[in-house]
Image (cartoon, rainbow, N blue to C red; front, side, top):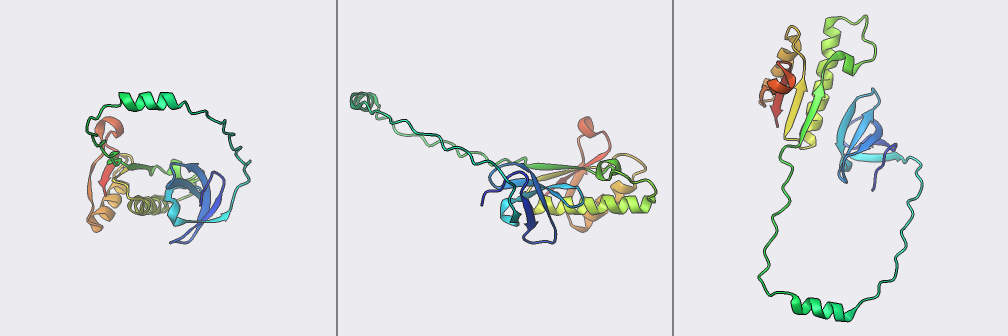
Amino acid sequence: MKFGIGDKVDFLNEKGGGIITKVINKKMVEVTIDDGFVFPYAVSELVMIEAAEREAEPIPEKEEEKIDVSKLFSQKLNHSDKPKKSKPHAQNNGMLEMEINLHIEELLDNYSGMSNAEIINVQLRHFQKALDKAITGRFRKLIVIHGVGNGRLKQEVRAILDNENMRFYDGSYAKYGYGATEVHL
């Protein structure tokens, strides 16, 4: 089944659903879930609930091609009998990575009145969902932007990663400063 932007979908292996907001490729799309977060999903993990209305794409008309037999014959004569070399396989994107930003202002529109504990719980829930998506989406790397702050969120994120026996390092200092953790999946 071909999915497109605006299609309403449910998740095959988990509760919930959302709307497709971006088609990454034939096998991956981005879905904005009900609480506003955006996650990549494999097309095979989605069930179509309601297709968005789209105009039908016109089918291009084929012009009849006239085949010049003499041209084909001369090409055949000029073709050398060199042994064919195999082409290298398209390299699998070994650096398929996902980046998440756990700054609360990126996650919620209004967080005033929330305690620090409530804010960290929201951030950790978002992190856990993103980690699960990165694992099921077979990403190689997850960049977690937690910020510098007093380090509480960073400690909690790394405690979860330790529990999962996952390899992680400080993120690129040049790109993120001291506020990111790089997880190898």
